[in-house]
Length: 223
Image 1 (spheres, helix red, strand yellow):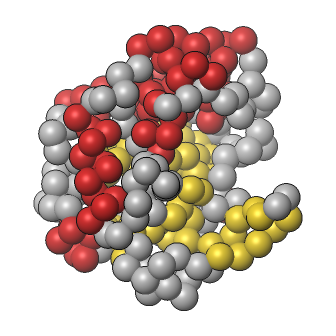
Image 2 (cartoon, one colour; image 1 turned 135 degrees about the vertical axis):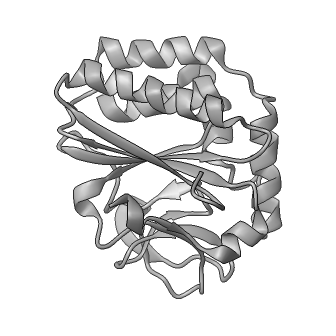
């Protein structure tokens, strides 16, 4: 599916330094959070560096498309502010959240089987549906025009680049096949980006030794 994942030119014009490493993992071994996955979160919390230059780069990227990064923080910024009590969700989500914190890197985790068409990073028109929860009940919202969003053929899968995921594609305890998006801006090195992906792949193999993992780096020139 990697040949169909795309970053629209309007996003690349906004941040020419943006690159995303897309990784699929088929045959995941998920389940409720346990001592192993919460241990990963505890270790990550002890290694966190809130003022990593990459976090500041993401704040600047948010401001560039009109978001207020102090109100709707980049995902890694929000996680780093919770290092004393990182939330346990399920084993796979705990794994990628721990890697996100340790590497100061936004990482999105998606249920690949819930996708309708390929993942695309675009500037929103403002009409796309985004399914979420509001006051504990299902709701449909719409992004602001010009907002950077991940989407598929059915709607927005993640708002404000990596701020909030939709309900439909989130990874649950029953997810078998996942798509992970490792999102990088300068000055973050590509070597560190690949190291983060390899770290997550190793953790996923601990959870499911037979998991099948593939990846590709997508950027201005498909590096």
